[in-house]
Length: 364
Ligand code: ATP
Image (cartoon, rainbow, N blue to C red):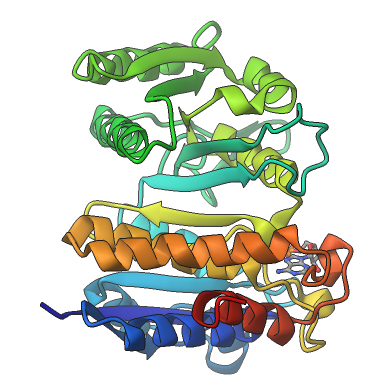
């Protein structure tokens, strides 16, 4: 049976269009070769450049297309010189998280044995864990509405039972899935600061209640400061980490650092009905239009999209194509010839993306 999926595409700002075009092209080629699924792409405007032109950063038509799509593929949005009147940055991707309740920010951290990392890993050792960052509340709850007087500034952290239950269910389901695929040990670690804040004791209690429903998986806790240390000292020990929004914001950049930088870090923001797939990096205006942008994080995000859609809809061929796409990127990262400028190489955006296509389709 051929199943058709509608994909909303936000090309965004800066290097966004440069990394989106070859990524969509790879997805089109994969789908064209599969009898099992079809992909229909709907390109929609949003972002800082669109705001400068029209006064709107996330048009309601774009939002409607995104809401109705099976998945949303987003490159990067925002430009340092284009801001709202109050001086804040234009970030429709954050608005999408809130509008669509995308509570699970999924940040995989993966380094193959011998792969790029600033760490000196033991011989034959790789890194493969997933950080799940709650993305709708926590310390971002009062984002843009914090109280500031002459003498004080105040922001509020919000942890709700409803979102936390969904978050932990998602984390344990992911650990079960990874265990089944032979990728993880079936371990979920709650990262918090329950020794200091009552809100985190509450968070941990909800985690423990979900853990009790999964006797086949192991569950433990870590304080966020200790986790920052362990992610550097022994990152290979972890499987699924789950944490609050601000802690996750910080630890996910540490995770990106472990895997050779932002140019290799994919992500997904997943809710009950919608999901956005986008690279962790920003719009990199300093290199826009020069053909130097690294497309790998964007392609890896698209691979996550295929895996998520395939798993969610029971289209195994699509899930497997997502895995193949990610492996084809791994091959380039492992090669000395297809490293982009940010990785210390000379490969241009189109060369890197074409090499991924060659590895996929020509067995190169
Ligand atoms: P944001 O606040 O939007 O996340 P940022 O200020 O963290 O953005 P980025 O746009 O991610 O910054 O860029 C940080 C640095 O990394 C810049 O020097 C940029 O050129 C580089 N960079 C980011 N993404 C890429 C990429 N895909 N390829 C090459 N270099 C990149």
